[in-house]
Image (cartoon, rainbow over all chains, first blue to last red; front, top):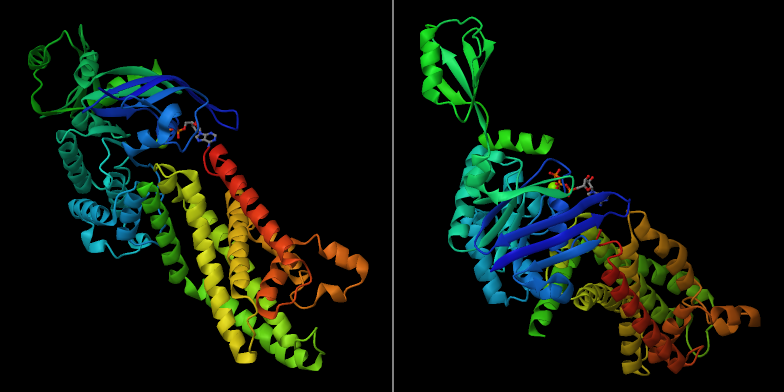
Length: 302
Length: 255
Ligand SMILES: Nc1ncnc2c1ncn2[C@@H]1O[C@H](COP(=O)(O)OP(=O)(O)OP(=O)(O)O)[C@@H](O)[C@H]1O
Ligand SMILES: [Mg+2]
């Protein structure tokens, strides 16, 4: 079953700005789906339309087969959303914010309290339940919004840059948490600027730019498209300019550091043997950038 | 339906928590202001004035002052609560949920009524220090207070929907509601006015609300109580519908 189906979605803001120019998107139930794109690409606009905060200009959106034009309330019940920007009252207490949200979805007070406790505990906020939201740190505020988005147990969870401004350790914790949700069969859509994040979490990835989906495949397929890979080599001694050869390009970064870009056809062995022939000893080697990032740049700049 | 009741209850609970969290701003100031009115207009000046009809000036203005506090506080609560929810964007919590618009309106309006009527009640208690009001027809008084509070909560909500900045929430109270209330026969009987001004006053809806409420206590009214009631019901329906239309169109709430 499709958790989300978007057909030919357009959005023209009142200012006249065309934010979406015909978005098509399919998300299967159970997918962990990444929606990537540069600033201003239309990610938040798309999510806004799915969650009714933004009205669409044209097009069709179905959530688990329910057309939002036909029965938006029924569709909304199945969706939980974690927005990009803080949107809770900073004066309200953590527990109130979460249980009250459950109430808006019609959950009885008992169930609301139970779910709120479950998710606040999982997200490490239970001790802060009587704290006013304004006294939380940035990372805690993000987690509060995640707990709030889950409290009615939605089948589809949409997260708009949930790890923005969250430190590395906490981010990993959040990843584990999201992967656990995904394993339990929940469909997750996530936008992020951290490409490493999409690579770690998502099994399907779509790339949006200028209000259009420019790529939509499985992560593996996407990576397979990537023809070139770049490594950074630390050498034991200082090196001179290294001549590029067929399929392998060298660039000197500093006295002892080389950057090498190879096409897929070339093996890494051939790099090593070539350098060996030049008497260059390699101490260590690392991937230059996230591979997805390279692909991303290629696609966006096309 | 049960689901809608839970949503409604959640909104009302949130509104009540808000009112009591900032009680220094919501409940105390109106009581202080109205106490001053009682002291100055009722005791100091009122004692120098002759009766209006069969009643002392103090007992004449008491119902009007209570009603005035109900009007301002009902309006102030919905306009500031709804605008603040827009400003902090927590209105999105409701918008993304399946809560229907009529429940949203009703929830906020119940919050406005809770504050309007609580303040009205506190002010009534204060008035007891100064005057012993007779009770002519309690159901009429209660009905007028509820409907008036309902109407002004609805009006405040419309203001909150349109408001884009903080200044926008005080324009209508300052330039429309306060003048209409002061000219609405709180401090005088409109039957004492020259004929022309009596006619003009009859175009002011607040005249009907204050007089209807006063009738409940004193049994006297400048206007026909039934006309007042009909008017309140008309405004209730019209403003509730206006709120529904605005929310449905997404004015001020959805981009
Ligand atoms: N209310 C609005 N009125 C007019 N234009 C808007 C409005 N909201 C967004 N836009 C424009 O629409 C485009 C898409 O914005 P959107 O927020 O969807 O981008 P995004 O992909 O979420 O970007 P980011 O990664 O920075 O969050 C941007 O150019 C933005 O300036
Ligand atoms: Mg965004």
